[in-house]
Length: 252
Image (cartoon, rainbow, N blue to C red; front, side, top):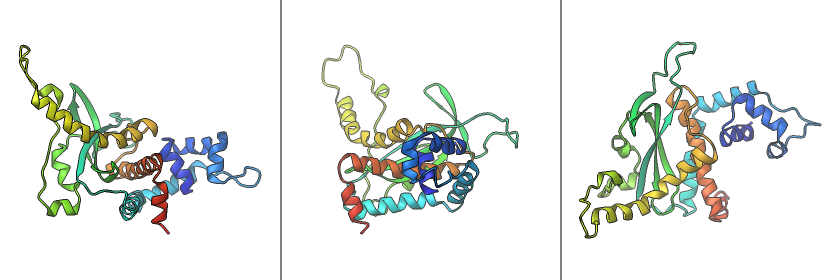
């Protein structure tokens, strides 16, 4: 059942879609070690109950914490500062449901002259390695800066923290007839050369795993899914750089 749930997370499938994909895909049946001549595929209701059990006991957060701890023990996290960013996850505005109202835990906000209704996922990434070590979820109208204190590590809270905010390019104004070097733009470009690491996990979650919208009602249920997604993103990045043996070695 855990393998079936992981496939649901990785491919952004519904409960019914998870069941159908196992019947249709040989690779998914092989991953689940299921032989249709001998075994029966768990149905959508069984997957639904298993998913609710994981959400109720917050297993997603525990798996994410365990993966992060193993990265730290294996020496894959450099502890060289933290890069923080947030991403909007829109959800349905429809009131056509049993309660006849929108999700009370979500909120609307404006970004780029467009209105969004949903939540924000805040992530902090180790500046040295690029692996995500902490994520939190808030309503969409929560400002990024107000959540920063919950994203930095304990050792960074005890030391003198130097915050460096990456400004938007549009905020760097300069006269058109100026011929000199724009030092403000040059410094922001240097900061972005480090900050881009926090964009990579979001790229994996949104584009490769297809989870660009919050599909459940309530922040906690969605955060359980995001914990699983970002734990998987960390393992995928670790595999791509050929360090998965170091991660497996710390489990022995």
